[in-house]
Image 1: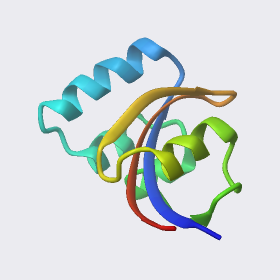
Image 2 (image 1 turned 60 degrees about the horizontal axis):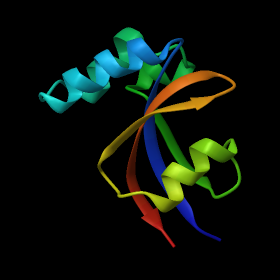
Image 3 (image 1 turned 135 degrees about the vertical axis):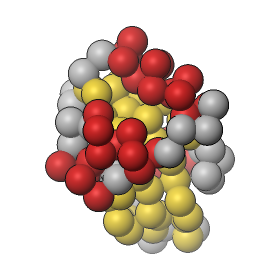
Image 4 (image 1 turned 180 degrees about the vertical axis):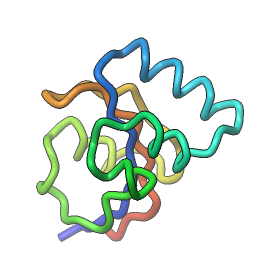
Length: 93
Protein backbone atom coordinates (compact mmCIF):
# COMPACT_ATOMS: atom_id res chain seq x y z
CA UNK A 1 0.00 0.00 0.00
CA UNK A 2 1.18 3.50 -0.86
CA UNK A 3 2.69 5.67 1.87
CA UNK A 4 3.54 9.35 1.94
CA UNK A 5 4.96 12.06 4.14
CA UNK A 6 3.29 15.45 4.12
CA UNK A 7 2.88 18.68 6.00
CA UNK A 8 -0.03 21.08 6.11
CA UNK A 9 -1.38 24.32 7.49
CA UNK A 10 -4.96 24.19 8.77
CA UNK A 11 -7.00 27.38 9.13
CA UNK A 12 -10.68 28.18 9.61
CA UNK A 13 -11.44 30.20 6.47
CA UNK A 14 -10.71 29.96 2.75
CA UNK A 15 -9.68 33.63 2.82
CA UNK A 16 -7.02 32.99 5.46
CA UNK A 17 -5.72 29.97 3.52
CA UNK A 18 -5.50 32.01 0.32
CA UNK A 19 -3.56 34.79 2.09
CA UNK A 20 -1.08 32.25 3.46
CA UNK A 21 -0.76 30.58 0.05
CA UNK A 22 0.18 33.95 -1.51
CA UNK A 23 2.88 34.35 1.12
CA UNK A 24 4.19 30.84 0.42
CA UNK A 25 4.19 31.53 -3.33
CA UNK A 26 6.42 34.53 -2.61
CA UNK A 27 8.90 32.37 -0.70
CA UNK A 28 7.66 32.45 2.91
CA UNK A 29 8.82 29.53 5.06
CA UNK A 30 6.15 26.81 5.26
CA UNK A 31 7.25 25.58 8.69
CA UNK A 32 7.22 29.06 10.20
CA UNK A 33 3.74 29.84 8.84
CA UNK A 34 2.46 26.48 10.13
CA UNK A 35 3.83 27.18 13.61
CA UNK A 36 2.23 30.62 13.67
CA UNK A 37 -1.14 29.99 11.96
CA UNK A 38 -2.08 26.28 11.86
CA UNK A 39 -5.00 25.15 14.03
CA UNK A 40 -3.70 21.56 13.92
CA UNK A 41 -1.45 20.22 16.72
CA UNK A 42 1.05 19.38 13.93
CA UNK A 43 1.60 23.14 13.59
CA UNK A 44 4.06 22.94 16.49
CA UNK A 45 6.20 20.70 14.26
CA UNK A 46 5.97 23.03 11.27
CA UNK A 47 2.88 21.20 10.01
CA UNK A 48 4.71 17.87 9.70
CA UNK A 49 2.29 14.91 9.72
CA UNK A 50 5.00 12.27 9.38
CA UNK A 51 4.53 9.19 7.23
CA UNK A 52 1.11 7.59 6.80
CA UNK A 53 -0.69 5.11 4.56
CA UNK A 54 -3.25 5.87 1.88
CA UNK A 55 -6.71 5.87 3.46
CA UNK A 56 -5.61 7.09 6.90
CA UNK A 57 -6.56 10.72 6.23
CA UNK A 58 -9.92 12.17 5.18
CA UNK A 59 -10.74 11.63 1.50
CA UNK A 60 -10.16 15.20 0.21
CA UNK A 61 -6.77 15.27 1.96
CA UNK A 62 -5.82 11.79 0.72
CA UNK A 63 -6.64 12.75 -2.88
CA UNK A 64 -4.12 15.60 -2.79
CA UNK A 65 -1.40 13.57 -1.08
CA UNK A 66 -1.63 10.52 -3.32
CA UNK A 67 -2.65 12.04 -6.67
CA UNK A 68 -1.16 15.54 -6.98
CA UNK A 69 2.36 16.74 -7.66
CA UNK A 70 4.95 16.16 -4.91
CA UNK A 71 6.60 19.22 -3.23
CA UNK A 72 4.08 21.65 -4.75
CA UNK A 73 1.81 23.45 -2.26
CA UNK A 74 -1.83 22.57 -2.93
CA UNK A 75 -4.94 24.24 -1.61
CA UNK A 76 -6.96 25.58 -0.09
CA UNK A 77 -8.50 22.12 0.34
CA UNK A 78 -11.74 22.05 2.34
CA UNK A 79 -12.44 19.27 4.85
CA UNK A 80 -14.66 19.05 7.91
CA UNK A 81 -11.72 20.46 9.91
CA UNK A 82 -11.34 23.67 7.88
CA UNK A 83 -9.10 24.71 4.98
CA UNK A 84 -5.71 23.12 4.38
CA UNK A 85 -2.61 24.05 2.46
CA UNK A 86 -0.89 20.74 1.79
CA UNK A 87 2.61 19.81 0.68
CA UNK A 88 3.54 16.20 -0.02
CA UNK A 89 7.21 15.77 0.85
CA UNK A 90 7.54 12.29 -0.68
CA UNK A 91 5.36 9.40 -1.76
CA UNK A 92 6.07 5.70 -2.17
CA UNK A 93 3.61 4.11 -4.58
